[in-house]
Amino acid sequence: MKISFEVSAEFRDDLGKGASRRLRRSGKVPAILYGGHSETRALAVDHTRLLLLLEDERFYSTIVNLKVGEQKQAAILKDIQRHPARNQVLHIDLQRVLDDEKIRLRIPIHFKNEATSTGVKSQGGVMMHLQSDAEVQCLPKDLPEFLELDVANLELNKSLHLSDIKLPEGVALSSLLHGRDESVVTIHAPRAEEEVVVAVAAEAVPVEGAVAAAPAGAPGAPGAAPAAAGDAKKGEAAPKAADAKAAAAPAAKKEGGKK
Image (cartoon, rainbow, N blue to C red; front, side, top):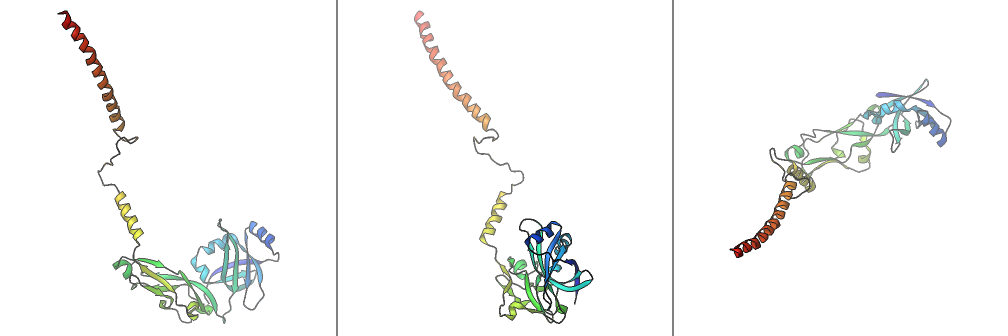
């Protein structure tokens, strides 16, 4: 049995919602330990230490060494409750592990050769992961850290299923045991919306050296205000010239009469 992490905890006898709230305010996380043909025990785990452990992907899919005082117990993480808004763990469930009893645990799936997959590299498709983990059943000694699925030969509009995963000896997938060979990954053609977005983005990129033309008369557009002022001056000058001509005509007539 491979153990990668150790979790320190303490027994607690104060139960209920009020006790759990007080425990959280003191920097602890309420927990329970069950299974293994023994009674269920209430525990308290340090919150800061637990957050550090939860940052490692392996913590969710491996056997941990639970230490309570001088007692040690192999266990697996079965459930975790988080606060919806804060980075806070509200509660965890741990299950005892026995060497001779099979366990069920969700294991992450790692996808191999994604970038060089036939459907992506040669056929221009987009890869979509339909499942990121899968539940396995095995003895503790056979529990793998992850499952691997090679997608190198996956073509456009094709899928790979749970049955395509090469399992280690002694490991079985729960879905396959129940007759469900679910799809895990597929490659599809780029959607029309994606192509339109790319085309619009390409048109929006300005060409080097080009100057964007502003609409005539647009507020703040270079040259718009001076042009408008010039037009106004021309419009004012026309009536003034007409008035001057009209005033000059009678004067000329008077001078002609005197002669």
